[in-house]
Every structure is written in C-alpha cells, then in structure tokens.
Image (cartoon, rainbow, N blue to C red; front, side, top):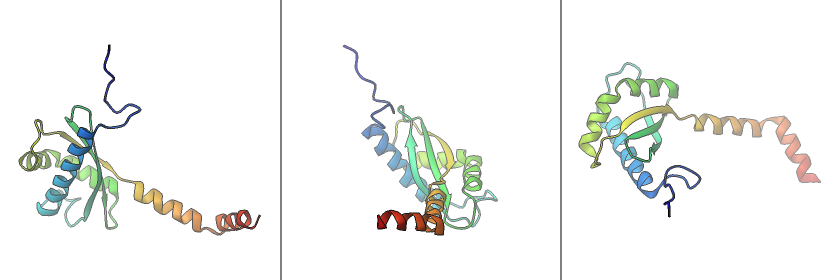
Length: 136
C-alpha cells in the first residue's frame, strides 16, 4: 500500500514545516533587529517579517517582509535578497536545523490589500449599498 504524500497538497504544510518556519521567522526577526544591515535600501528601515513558509524538505524558505514605515515592501525584499548570504550565515549560527535553508524574500502585500478593502468599504457608494441591504 502506497503512503500518502505529506507535502503542501490539499492538506497544507506539515507540523514539522510549520515549526521549522516559525523557528526561522523568530531568528530572522532577531537578525534584522540586531545586525547592522549595510544595504543602502535597508539602512534605517523598520522591517517586519510576517510569515515564513518552508518547502517540504526544509531546504528552501520564503520570508514575507514589509516595512513599518513608508518604504515599499518590494524595496525591502530586494535589499534582503541582495544580502541573503549574510543573513543565511547568521541564521546558521542561531537555529539548529540539519540544513540551513536557502532564503527567498517576497514583499508582504497583505497589509496593502487590507487597507484597500477598508477604503472600499468606507466609500460612499458601498456604504449606500450596505445601508439598502440592511433596510430590506
């Protein structure tokens, strides 16, 4: 009898993937907060790491990053990608995994999407439509 695959299929990530990704997220937050990042796009930027997703073999991890300030998340992701070997070296010292994962950084646009939805819901046209549905 063939065993079912535990990859990111319909079931989602395994507990092992989730634990390792959260461990790496905490380590990345510490690295970004404590290290002096010398990339010009990252100097003085306040960076937040919202989520880390791990591949089934834990050799690749994608971190979703954004800025608490006015800096574009794409600029932050590009800057972290440029210094990913430095960050990976620091990560190897701070986490105890069999392999230090290859890091990939993606801009986290979920905050922008949430703000856009809030703006749409606050617009007069949508408020008018919501009021009509509530009256009926």
